[in-house]
Structures are given as structure tokens and as C-alpha cells.
Image (tube, rainbow over all chains, first blue to last red; front, top):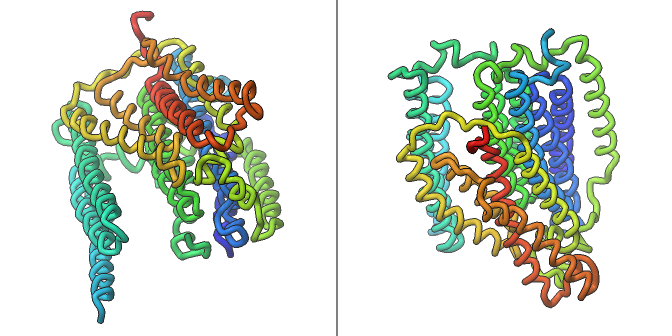
Length: 104
Length: 116
Length: 307
């Protein structure tokens, strides 16, 4: 088993649990945690696949590394905006759940 | 036995001792009953543990710059974890106006809320 | 960088999956967030194992540090009631069975496609290394970010700009009950802030030929800024210099792009002779902007006599 395969499979598992949490959770903060874990899984798959060039070219592929670096920054800024929207919803509705998830 | 062998043996011993302190600190965090004794286990053991690991690593460093960077890492962690420990203890002490924090297994409101 | 699998990798993967799941499924959201922060730190260890030190530096500061601070800050503002969730937040109910099945289906598809890929692959490593001489830097990741795929990075800074505008557009929120100025926190700030600035400058400079660069430097600066805000609350959006700093990176990047389109070989095509200097200029401006934007995202829009 290669390093790329091990971390690639781990990335897939993270994608799946992040996706499940983002869709199944009711608290918006937990949905955002799910999206972030989902993102980490995607990044892990990319970096794991990048490591496959080590044997032929002598080093991992720098292009996916740059994409993941970009992705991390975009993910955190999107999370920050989503959290600000969550706080606004909580200020106005006194609930941290989306309207369709609230108890009647 | 050459000088190189002695150096790497000494280095490994120091790193091993450091890991033992990390282990003791981690067990302390898991087993000790309240917040203050957990912090005590964490900061004391981790600072000494990290110090020993860094000392062991400096023996394997390639040049003086690496030694300086390793020592800088230790000093910064020492400083930051001392302040963080103080801040955690401070906020726990002043929360709810209680003089003594009772965070731990005795207090179900702060711990074991997962129902695990 | 050893390419073979060590026992450490198995331990790390098991820990990552366990912590990742706890970060999602812990009933107590505070615990979940703390576990997410630890998860982020372990992810940056995985980047080191996979030979991606540039990514590891950014992940440790942004993924674990800044994202954790943002989540904890929001949790504190939601209050005790708002931060309470179900006892079994992800428990399998009939309504969630479809989601679980869809996630499982995705796993099967992804595993099948990853297993179908060859274990060794030339990728884009060789072309990236061949063009390195004309890129102006010798770190291939920096060359990719600022030269080969400059569009991506320009638009990324644009996304950051939009995110901070989005936060500023929302109505002002009351400041958290201010903790009395803590002498220890001020001491930490006084010691760490100069070191943060020095380390960020070092990362910016060293990024041309070693792991580092504008993003990693900006992440460090932003961490220093968040610490500053915690020790002495800032009111960022009000001041004109802050607004200038927020747009500086995007403006300089776009300006360089337009200049190269008018006078040179095309939009963001740097002449090899000046590429190094141009990249450093863009990175310096981008570092300031990204750092200020991240701090602004953390500070949010505090109430200032408007409410």
C-alpha cells in the first residue's frame, strides 16, 4: 500500500462523514463543521494523489499543493461569512437552526 | 563505540525521556479529577517533555541555526503554554463567580455531556 | 521525504478519522469545536507526511488556528441556549437513512475511482520544474501560485474581499461582554506580536525558494491580529487605512495584470527577468491584505453607535 492510497482512502472517509453531517445535522454550526471536514477530505485526496508523482519526477506534484493552499484560504473565509450569517440569524430569530429544522 | 554513537544514544535517551513525560502528562489529563490538577499535569509534563525532546534533537542538528530554531520553539511553547494555562485557570475560576472550579467527572454539567 | 508507509501513518489516519467523526458527532458543540481544532493540527501533520510542507504551514495557522477561533467566537455569541443541540445530533433516523445511503454510495464511487488510478503518475511535476527557471522563484509551489496559475490566486484574493464585504454588510452585532484587560494576555501580545511580524516577513521572503510565502505569512500575521483583538478589542471597519489594506492585495495584483497585458506578453504573463521582483511585490501586498481581511472576518462588525 502506498502513502498516496492510504491518505486517499482516508480523504474519502472524511468526505463521506463531512457530507453526512452537513446534510443530516440540524444545528447550523454543526453543518458548517461538516462542510469543513468535507473540505479537508477533498484536500487530503488532492494532496494524496499529488504524492503519486514522487517516484517518477522526484517530488510531489506542486500544482495540487497550490490548489489546496488556495482552497484552505477560501474555505476559512467562506466559513467566516457563513458564521456571520448564522450569528445574524440567531440575533433575529433566536434560533441556530434553519427555519425548516425548527420545532413547531 | 565512536563519538557519533554516543551522541545518538544520548539523543535517543533524551527524546525517550521526553516522550515519557508527554505520556505522564496525557494520562494525567485523562485521569485527574479536576481542571486545576489536569492543567498542572499538562503544563509541567509537557514543558519538561518538550524540553527533553528538543534537547535530544539539538544533538542531531546539522548546524547552529537549527539548534537556535529548536530552542526558540521550546521557549515559545513554554511561554505560550504558561500564559494559556493561566488564562484557562483564570476564566474557570471567575466563571459563575465561584472561587473554586469544579470541572470534572463530579460535575455532570461540564463533563460527560456526550453520554459516552 | 520517505514515500513508504510507516506505522505512524496508520496511527495518524486512525486518529484523523476518529477525531473527524468526534468533531461532527459530539453532542456538546464546544467539545466538537475543540476536537475540530485538534483535527486540523493532525491534518497538518498529514500534509508533512505527504511531502506538502507549504500546505502544512498554512493549515496549522489557518485551518486549525483561525477557523477554531472563529468557531469558538460564534459559539460564545450564540449563548447557552443557542449552542445546545440534540443529544444524538447525527443519530440514524428514517429521515436520515437516505443521506447515509447517498454518502455511502459516494464512498463506493470514490474508492472505485481512486483504486482505478495508477499508483505512479508523472503529473505536472516535470513541466512545473522545467519552467522554474523562467518563473522568478525556485519553490515550485510559489511558482504555481503566483506565476503559472496567477488567475487562481487573483480570484482567490477576490473571494476573500467578497467575504469581508459580506460580513461588513450584515447589521452590527453587540460586542461580547468585555473581559477586563488581562495583564498576562497583554504580556503575551507584547512578546508575540513583534515575533509574529518578523516570522511573517521571513516566511514571505523564504517562500521564493523554500516552503513559505504570502499565505503562510498572512496566516501568522492574522493570528497575531486575533491575539491583539483578544487583548485589546479592535474596531476595524471604521478606519480608512484598514479599508485601504483590505483592497491593496487585489488592486496591486490586478494592476500588475493590466500592466503586463498592455506593455508585456499578456495578462499576468511576467517577463522572466523581472518575475522574481514582481512576484515579491504582489506577495507583499497580498500578505498585508489577506492578514487584515482575516482579522476583519474575526472581528466582524461591532456596534458603533449605530444601534
